[in-house]
Amino acid sequence: MTGDKKTVFSGVQPSGNLTIGNYLGAIKNFSKFSEEYKTFYCVVDLHAITVRQVPAELRKRTYETLALYMACGLDEKKNTLFVQSHVPQHAELGWILDCYTMFGELSRMTQFKDKSAKNAQNINAGLFTYPALMAADILLYQTDVVPVGIDQKQHLELARDVAMRFNQIYSDTFTVPEGYINTDTMKIMSLAEPTAKMSKSDPNQNAVVYILDSKDDIIRKFKRAVTDSDTTVKYSDEKPGISNLMTIYRAFTGKTYEEIEREFDGRGYGDFKLAVGEACADGLAPVRDEFSRLIADKAHLEAVMKSGAEEAAYYARKTMSKVRRKIGFVN
Ligand code: AQP
Image (cartoon, rainbow, N blue to C red; front, top):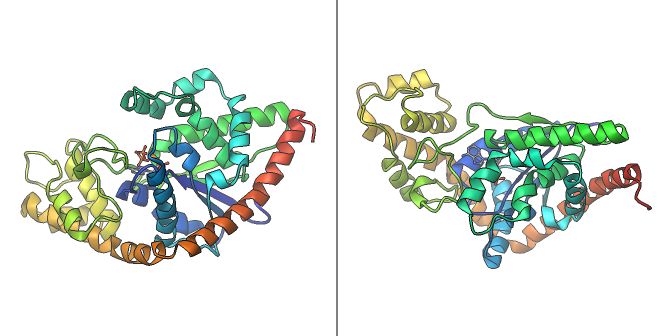
């Protein structure tokens, strides 16, 4: 709780251009909470450096991610929008929670296993302790609800365990957070490999639809999407490619799976893929327009970052003062 309102926290890494997976699985859900909750939405740049980043790109993407938050409907007056590294308490609590997170717990994290396999040259300690920093992000704001895609569920459960462990040792200190996972869009899959998650760091550009892709690129990518040798548009575990496209089409049109099956009955995959591409491109057009406007005004983005960080730091300091006292640090 923050004051008399429940608190929401979530973040996105500026580790690549944001995808429709990030949009449908996470950011699109953020604004649902703006009215009734105290909301903190963070660009988590400390997390991004667990994988090597080109400095100029990281800086550029940090601005872009903030602008995308706003372009997706997050009003800076109703939401605290900020950059993680601007609030040093994230790193401070991250270290402290490292000391309350077990090696065995971190070893079980599937994201660590996946990312270690993809970055065999750079399996750094930060990649391993990533979930403890994520727990710090969440617990710092006494967060009640964390909207995320299903891939973050395991990390969220660890954050809950760490919060409960700390509370048990030192008495109630942290709110134990709940996840909010939109089951309609919790895992958007790669267009090239529909059994794998769509990821912004995927080197295959055709596997990923970026929020800021042009309409032509979006349509081209959907036309090339991997499906199957059948011709029926039907939602089924045996048809992961088509089912993924149906999930995306449903998210942009509001139609049910049954309605989609009827709409494309007897029409084949070509028509369907074109319709998905058009619905996605048209659905994202207002976001792209608003983004172009916002990204051109760097001074405004910097002002939003600054006031967001000041607001966030106020709450972060309150939690840290409690944590420091409970642990036994001299103030
Ligand atoms: N494909 C997806 N479907 C649904 N939700 C997704 N999210 C990511 N991909 C999908 C959700 O987006 C939020 C922000 O993710 P993140 O930037 O913290 O990192 P991630 O989960 O590791 O996302 P990526 O795109 O796969 O990034 P990289 O490639 O850098 O690792 C989270 O809520 C996530 O669940």
